[in-house]
Image (cartoon, rainbow, N blue to C red; front, side):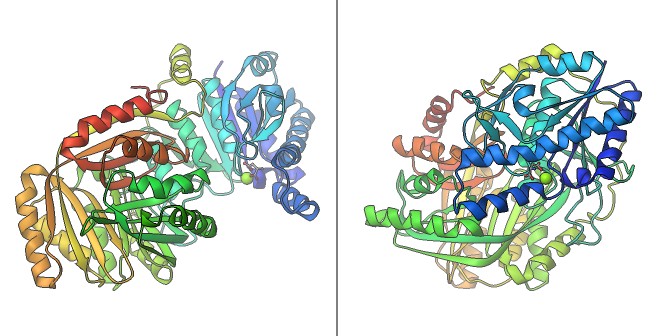
Length: 592
Ligand code: ASP
Ligand code: MG
């Protein structure tokens, strides 16, 4: 019999009436002939209330006891849900994380799932029960109760769907699906019928808060079809699967992350290990850095900029302060700007179309909005703009890419072919623990060249003008990285080597016209791309990569990161050796 997992979030079980409504949804699926596993969150704002209560008692509550406390929220919900189903005449049994057999590591409040033993659930299902599983919790090797981090019930649901090889995982929530942008900010935003795992991962981390990012990583790694739908209506919702909604569209969605801080570190020695020295102490504090941009330096000095969530500013400054104290030559100066926000576009189709980034720069420039920093990766372009202009920039790009209109080629999703149980087991067994970092490939692209423009003036529309020229000259651009210091901007991009001369000539012309420092070109660089799942949520990945290359004496020219990629540009002479070093360091995670 096929299994369906249904997850109900806090708002969907906020009172007894809602619990009964959720119970009816499960019973309906049961009547349609499925075995049903429900995963439920704590009722309404109960988790918040428990946290507040703990803080009244202890200013920094011990995390083991927090997990003991927070797990009770879900325990209340599962018991009431089982009663609700029984009151409607069906059999049900509730289970805590430990009873289900969800084993996690011992990092309280942000535990990761290691394995799930399905015997007990299967027995209960086969005995005719609807199984009600407590979301967000597990147990470590020492029987301590652990929780998976805020919003973690999504992850429980997708993980259970993976190990049970469920036909689908339905996420019932207070929104009726995934939108092209946050509909509260962009009134024209459209609900998409379907979105790919990769796109959803990027959207989630870029500020579209529909689901817990880790749950999408699970869904991707174990190919679980996820169906996001409204609890209080029968709207069709959105399917998160491996294929995108449209093959023709370059962009599937846009997102804004407010409260971003950009830190710029100047005068970093342009030598192996320099970036590592800055990032190691930051990632040791488990601060997730985003938009890491290392620009090629003038006079042997590089500039490194990156963004962090505003809440991590003081911890990050403290870490960098310590670096400067122990190694005064690590960098010359640093500054930060906390009045920024990040606007991004995402789409799998971007890889096939040229001019996508340029169009984004252009429409933002047309509004007179200055772009302070740019990073591109295979499936997203992010720019930093002033906070006050963020919403306008978001609406502008949403409009420019016609995201409000459904693409013409959306086909109904064919029935998803079920994966065999044996194949599912193979997928689960290829890594030791279910939520481990998973690297699918480390690729070396030996056909790139790099061009850098220095000391560009900070005026709106500059990037748009430059890339318009580049596109008109038929030069195919790969990575774009722009970082701004307090007064000036450096812009680096890579092109296929055959375009190197043409690109440099163009850059010289632009620089001459603007009266800024002559551009440089490095005709032979290699790009190394690591792709996988959890590249960012495993906060130590960046520092492991950087440390490995630092220890190996490899100098890094450019870095950019996304949810499933870590891209590096190094001198061509170092490319092969760098890949070999990374393969060795990351061998546990590689599943090629
Ligand atoms: N109750 C937990 C929270 O509020 C888990 C969840 O809702 O997913 O974060
Ligand atoms: Mg919740």
